[in-house]
Length: 214
Image (cartoon, rainbow, N blue to C red; front, side, top):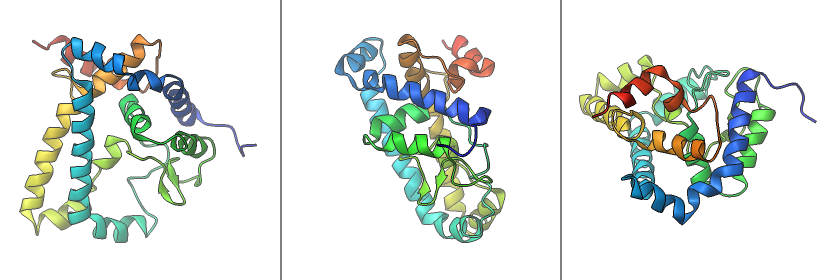
C-alpha cells in the first residue's frame, strides 16, 4: 500500500503516464510514421534529431556545469532544479521517454509518482537520481543564475554555445512551424487521449502561434 493519497500534481502526472502506457505502441507502429510523413512531417527523423540534440546538451553540461552544479546544489541538498511539484512536464516529454525506454522504466516512473522518495523534492528524484531515461526538457535546460554567472563570466564561449542551444530548442518545441512536441500531442489526441500536459494544444499563447503560421 502507498503511504498517502496523491496530491493534484501527482494525479496529473499519473493520469498522463497511464494514457501514454496504454497508447504508446501507436507511436511505434510503422503505419503511424507513414501517416504522419504523408502530412509532410518526418516523425522518425525528428525523433532522431531530438535525441541527438539532447545528447549534445548533456555533453555541454558535462563540460561546463557538472562539477559546479553537483558540488554547490545537488550534493548540498539545496537544489532548486528538483523542487517539490515544480517540474513542468510536457506530454511530449512522457511520449519521448516511453519511446526510448525499456519495458521496466515506465514502472519506475509510476512508483516514483505514487510514492515519492522525498516529501521536499521532485517526485521523480529517486535515490539513484532522476527516474527518467530522457528527462523533461525544462529539467535538461535548467540553469540557475549563480551557475550561469560562475561559468559564463570566465568562459564567454560557453555562453555563446548555450544561447545557440536555447534557440535550437525551439525547432522541436516552439510551434511557429510544425514541431515535434505539437505532432506527438496530435498523434495521441487522434487516438482519443486528453491531458492537461498537452500544453501545445492547451496553451492560448501557443495556439495563437499555430493559428498565425503561414
